[in-house]
Image (tube, rainbow, N blue to C red; front, side, top):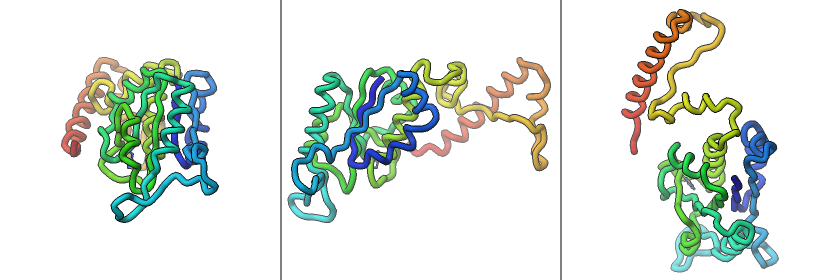
Length: 223
Ligand code: ADE
């Protein structure tokens, strides 16, 4: 799978994509991530990517031309690329969407900045995604979250595919509580059932706890 990430701050991605699972996925050749600097597609001396809004008002607006030209470049390499525009008003990202993206061959993610982008940039997008009902100062952190959640679902990326099946959201449930050594820490004990060796009982206990957490979680959800 390949990602093209269009941003005016490509350096922001280097540490996140240069570590852990995303790094290994790239090394294994399962994922290719190309950071596309929108500024490279400007033609003026100051490499301008924003301008004043028509009609007046506060703040600057991202110009359409550098983003269109950056997408021309991406499409020259990957004509069928699926294009995502990140915006706080988009459809809220979730595990289902991560799964859907992980099945695609090629995804471009356009990160907006400032107060927004020229409306015509929206015509480039196959879909608009938000990572939550809050406003970030740009799409970069949202893109990192989406790439992370998506990459780990690509077959072969995680060493242990079983861990995916057990994981939160996969079966519609939040994950059950996990413990490791020591058996007791600062007075907090590992539940006896987990030490019992009774696999049937352990499975039942985990299912019950997962359901309990799911009910609590649904109560907090604000849609
Ligand atoms: N850009 C600014 N806020 C955002 C959000 N919540 N999700 C995605 N992109 C954004």
